[in-house]
Length: 106
Image 1 (cartoon, rainbow, N blue to C red):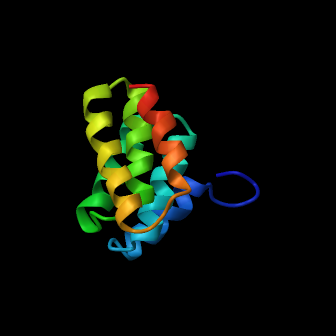
Image 2 (cartoon, one colour):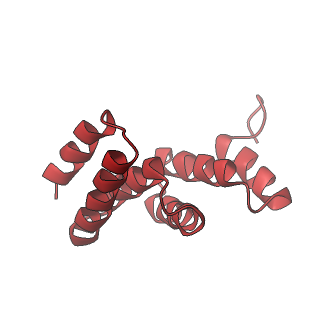
């Protein structure tokens, strides 16, 4: 354990051990795993988030990014198209550029 306390991964894992339905902690764990380059683990956590909240646009974008980096481009296209639809339906225009950038890598 680092001298300055638990890592982001450990903190979120501790929260989830006590509150397995804490969606923000699960998303935080997924992001921390992604940042550490643990794409398969991050992907698993992003998918769990979307199972519980299928309209969570930020998670869909993150899963799409993960899939692009993993080279799962067919699935990435599907996930990113869904993220774009969520953004439009929810009235969020700012993520559209990021989604388009990720789609261009497919």
